[in-house]
Amino acid sequence: MEFFQENIHLTEVLVQLIAFLIVFFTLKKFAWKPLLAIIQSRRERFESEWGGIEKTKQEVAALQKDYLAHLQKIEEEARAKMQEAVQEGRRLAREIQEKARLESQTSFEKAKANIELEVQKARLTLRQEIADLSIRVAEKILTEKMAGAQQEKKALEILGELEKKL
Amino acid sequence: MSVTEQHVTAAVQAVAQVQEQAAEELPNLITILEHFFPKSHFVHFLFSWENLVFSFLVLGFITFRAISAARKNEFLPKGLQNRWELVMEGLAEFVTSILGPRGMEHVPFLGTMFLYILLQNWLGLIPLMKSPTSAWSTTIALALITTVYIQWVGIKEHGFFNYLKHLAGNPIGILGVALIPLMLVINLSIEFFAVPLSLSLRLFANVSSEDKLLYKFAELNAMYHWLPFFFQLFANVLVILFSFIQAFVFLLLSTVYISLILPHEHDEDHNAASEKSPSPIHSPST
Image 1 (cartoon, rainbow over the protein chains, first blue to last red):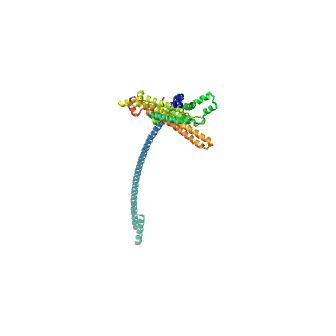
Image 2: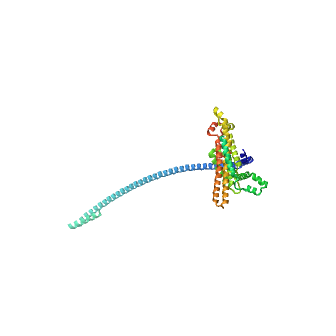
Image 3: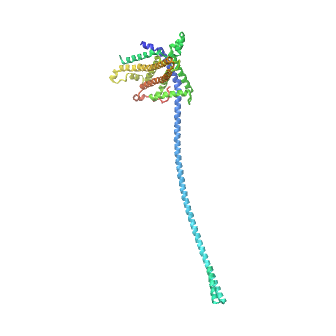
């Protein structure tokens, strides 16, 4: 007991106890409470802002998804329109080809008809000329007296002339 | 001789050994003043309350700095507020990692105690200062406060009758009732004697040994023409480290004692009807 009395000074212990308690309650009220409160409020604000960031990220992801879907839809529509345009172009090309073919056919037919008409006209003209020449040959034979060889030569000249015209 | 008596005898012998060597310590401002003004009443008063004077220095420093930091109250902390918030958050995280979210209400007590002990331990490293924790009166006061706080937490959490039941060893059946006196003696000895004794003695013995170490190296420097200076430098680093470890051990043990006296899960299930909802993780207690 004497040992404890020598080494533990009760007054010192008591003062130390009271001093610590005073400081503890002072710090608890004026230091720990405000500092822990501000740490807590900061943490809450960061958490709420972090939540906002997460929400915005989700919204951006949803928007991106919508955008990609929309883009895909646009691409599909463009592809369909392109296919349609190609089909239309091919149809138009076919129509133009068909039209050109018909027109060429018509032109050909017309030209053929014209040629035939011309041939007929030429034949008629030739026939008339042959008739005229025959008449003239006959007139000359009748009106001119010619030697047999000369007559034959004359007749051959007229025939050669006729052949050239034909 | 009972186990408790053996422990007390061993503790007394250990303290006696430390006390024998305690006279050998570096001079501080008050011992120097006492040396030069032996007849001054004021100096004699300071010398008589030497440990308290240095303790008040530490208490004043902590109070002034902590309140200055708290008064800034800036949302984006800087400087002093930033440093205090760093310390407080670190302490809060450590305490809540052992006690869980409800440990937040014990952070101010444990944090103040830790900072107080740490700064008292380190004070001995400053020239002309002294570690007040190298005196048993200081450490026993701190250990007693901690013990009372732990028991108060026990009474608050369990209720007074459940607390008494806990001290009586939660008796069940006739055997349990018969063992109540024995359990009371054991639990009271442990809670009110062994705990403060171990807390105070460990801290006091370690810090006074550190002071002794510093004194011996200083003595060697004087004797051998400053050759062991680098050894003393190394000893200073060790003292810084061990002072921190001692404060940390005090904090750790106090936290563990609180966790042991807090209601456990099966107690909470038992008292589910009257159980309050746990306090939020980081809300400071009022």
